[in-house]
Image 1 (tube, rainbow, N blue to C red):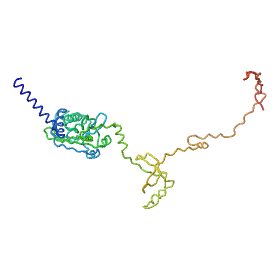
Image 2: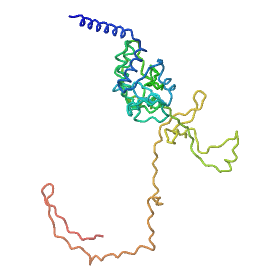
Image 3: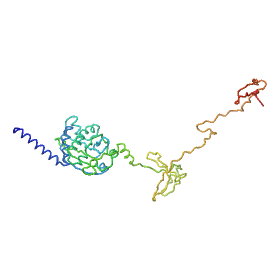
Image 4: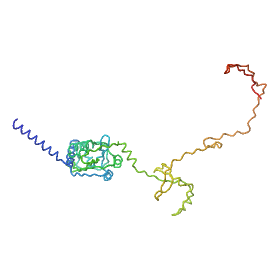
Length: 353
């Protein structure tokens, strides 16, 4: 081996050793910085410089309540589980659109505008590359498990939808501030995913499906019910005479005539008025059985009109004369009886007294 070849091999070995040492000593924060800058350039051609990186762990509800409503939310998860979301601000999502459509990053800050389907679609390649790069770069086992197998999905419309779709569990959130290109525009991206149970433990995918999560969220939603007494009528003069402290009689109303209604007036159940722990309460009663009554057919009713009356008396029908209308006698007939004997039928006249 000549001198040049030996020097080349030596340089490659030194470079590999330095890279290995850098990889072994990389921190989660540095891994996030490197991955974001590298994935933004390689996936969509956007040059960014990563600034501040903050991390926190909080319950899902607290995380969602602290979000800016203007952020664009993109679902993150596996094929069977919506685990969390990514949040992009106006400047970053607009920069992703600019570099992928016109190929140029504008110098001026983006004007405020509604989030579109195109914004969400053009953000997915960047997020997928970022998550994949973090999983390869991170030396921390918990960080690697936090993003392994996670990909970007569809847009989540708003914070309320995210609260209904996601499982309430401790969430690890990482916020990265970036400078976009060389024009001085700044943006921000946030990753929110479930925190591992212990350091180094992989995230176990949720066993529930999206349908189960949606059903659980809907069943946990608040419902407003009103306990309503039956309507009754009273003269207007009595209503105008109402005064504070006065007693209003409720004719026909009993403790068992309470109806529970939803906000739209739909009857939910019938109840009985009472007390529980010194406070007014109602006890849900079984539904009333339908009662059947005999229809009054004599009066005709609303559906069956009465028969018309016939004026005068019925005419007298003539009685036929036996001599003129007598039926001729029939000849004797024989038939087989059950025991084989013949049975003879005697002739009879058509009318008998």
